[in-house]
Length: 77
Image (cartoon, rainbow, N blue to C red; front, top):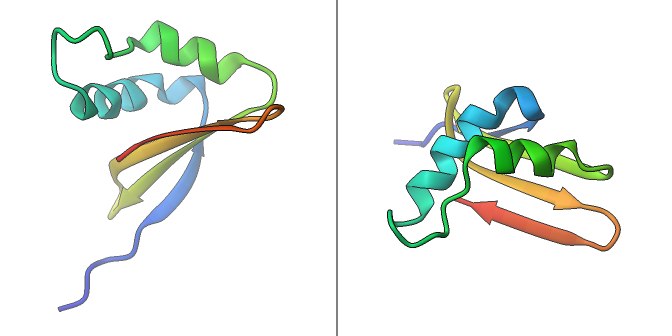
């Protein structure tokens, strides 16, 4: 059986709720490491930032954002 392929989609501040849910699923509660929607929206509004979400069958599984310059890549899978 072959797994369905992943697809990557560009995402902006309109998808901050999706990124927030994925981000929260990547970190344990009460650690101070979880960002809220406002923090993620702020990052996505910065000049030179590209947000991507990885999906399988339209279900978000993870995300990455990149900031140029300097090169900075953050991922939560």
